[in-house]
Image (tube, rainbow, N blue to C red; front, side, top):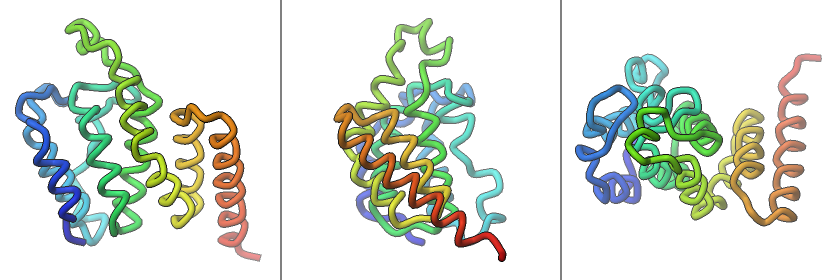
Length: 177
């Protein structure tokens, strides 16, 4: 896959070299990680390129997490390999369920989780689309994201149910008889 113009614009919009990354360095290498994940044709191509421990460590967030939510949403809005789509949804799920890492909190960035959830709300429809058109795992992750992010309780409940049913139905179809 090719990195879309929308993803490139979102990457270029941020000053990654001025943001703290989970690896302990500046986040200037994060755009390259996004490029590698999107362009990977096989799992082997992604070896060494993951957002884990850069944007989040488990559910502990770093300064670079907040702008990365917008980049992930931009990526999900376009064509992605199933492998990249899954990686981005897992990362997004961790970020919207996360909170500031202790080093970030010590520097006064105590609301990174809230900021990530707010950013995700801006593109929640993209998450729904990824869940409705992807596999069972994607549908389940999208349902979890709706549960964590959507402040419209009725809409959230509707999409959670729809996505969880879809995940269950797709899982049943995959099982051998």
